[in-house]
Image 1 (cartoon, rainbow, N blue to C red):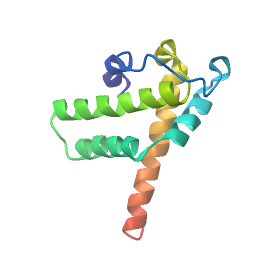
Image 2: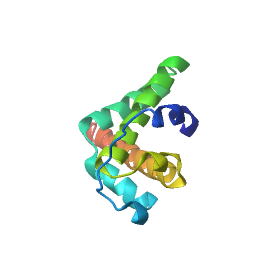
Image 3: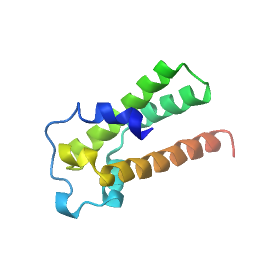
Image 4: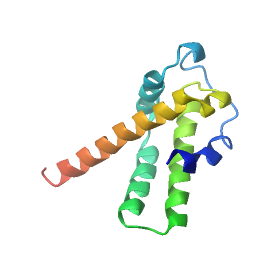
Length: 118
């Protein structure tokens, strides 16, 4: 998934806010900030990607959905959490994106199971 998102990561967000001091940012603190600032739109982007993957959608559709979700994560990290553009090409962002995706995926599945009484 990381290689699918990489081309989109550098194409977005030229201005960032200083929500987290850049020098003190860890993958966990960045992921926590992204989770805290996540919106229904971000959740919907991940749901769309998950559904396309589960339904064996054509590769182009899955790639498009993955890029949209990745761009949503980039926007969260840069606009809401203070990551600069150089930080998008760092292990900190890669690890934070993985932590964020894991958390949000578990949240989505938990919400789904609660709806069906599981």
